[in-house]
Length: 529
Image (tube, rainbow, N blue to C red; front, side, top):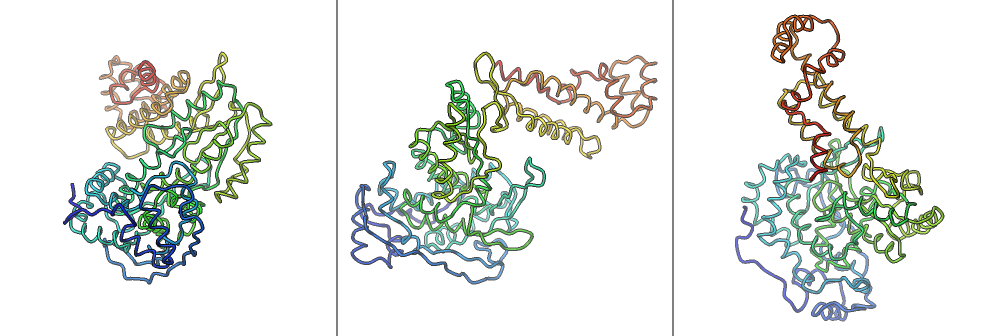
């Protein structure tokens, strides 16, 4: 564990704003300052700060600096920070902060940054980053190099964060292909140091926002997952809500309005230093193909803080749907709104689009958003069907195709990897896939898939044996008679045809002993438990 503090921990005072915040409020008049101070000396009440109008903040230009390898602030790029600490204090509209009953007290107002920078919180953040592993950011620093760096630079790092002078590094752009051909998902990989800081922020903010999040939200939340979301969908369908608005938000992470997100965050987070730090991460920019790109819109998908921020933003949609009395299920940005009739669903879609686009400044993908019967939609890789009056699950055909493509890749006989590595990767993938789709009825699917996969595995080994004498020896070891072993060893049939011939000799039992888990067998074990 790395030691964070060289000295004594500090906390914000209970009565009044923290010193950092007080300094950031220089542009506020004396009367306004007294009103804000009174509001933070006790729990927040309705209409506090009513009538305060703060001027809008200005973008500040940050000059270009020389690149220094693996330093706290890498600045070989032009980086513009939208606003510094004092400007964020002016963004807050205190009349909005108390509109909702779930607003926290001044305990969080004064010392949230101090809580984030606690030694135990930072140590836990480091452990989590190390556990998650992952590739390094633009500075090339890997997770294994993180601890020595933190030990050497901890004091400087903490001081700069406290003073509001810390400037996050841009993220490294990584593109991964989507299911739709030609489309890619853009990920932003932060540096490992920034990952630790983001993780520390997320650890303190998550418990606060968990109290505000909807019960119908399941993505990126503790003790909740895709299976819980699917079971809720099943429950709604069994209650007669069989028509759904299958909502698709176009490029959600890339199109989030940062000013709207900051406004939503400021309703709960009263420490301007924390708001400033989060905004700096949003504005840090991205390095793509060696070029720096500014990020005035959207938030990087890939950092520890992004999942929480996405839920904070979309919680506004959740509350609006609840206010209107709709049944819905949301997992990240995948949302389904349930109705008992098609007309009702169409009306819901028509009425909710103005809120999403006009209030949240997000864009609804009209090509992919549809109203349909629940049996016609795909959700989280599953599809639904009715059996004996009850809603049940199947694996969606696109998920099946994706799984088979992965097995083809793992059992590619032209791929230059050892049998040990191939067996390990195959086992990990198969078990992970079956565990995710365990809710589905798929015995027949897995039976056919296992048969096909075993044939591919036999073809891999037949090619590896190469020489006739090797084939003969291995066939004899499998228990084949001498004359038959010679006949097959000298066969001129191709690998795929020979794999079928070897079906009885190179049996399922032998393949299982080699480490290739049967999908059906593993599925049955899970179902029994």
